[in-house]
Length: 173
Image (cartoon, rainbow, N blue to C red; front, top):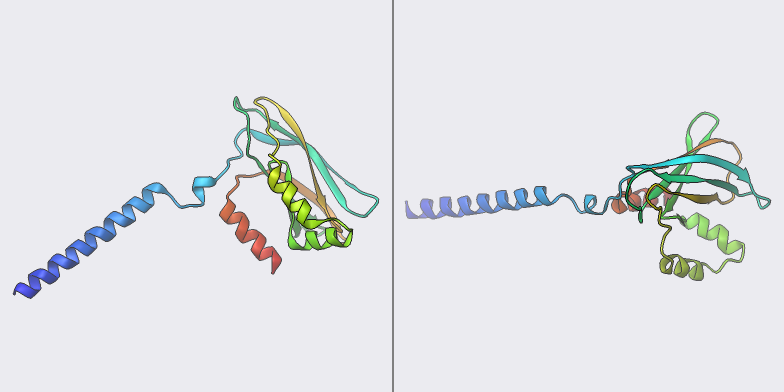
């Protein structure tokens, strides 16, 4: 009888501990949402694309902040589509700096760009701040795009670093 009481007490304590652990983790939220940057008040205006002499597709436009606070963090994703409407590629811009893929770095290295220096500069530079009720220009390059691009769509999206890491890892496969 004594063993049964001790076993029940231990199980009760374990259950209570598990309940408290689950409750505290659900109230603090997941790690990815703690760093999410929202797209509220931001919109893209006048997005256009042009082919550069080296064959790259340069997409540029303006991001407008209709909010009352400056935006130090913002994230743009450009989906590039083929003629059937399928996504050929996703180009990403975080705070005005393009996020290159491994394939992009390979292209840049073949062009003679010092990749380590490029990465170092990207880490050292602060991103572009969008002033309250203000606008900033942006540019993103699709390096050596394949033939068959029909259109693109540039959108300001919430930024979640965990989701971004997973997307880039999937693109590398």
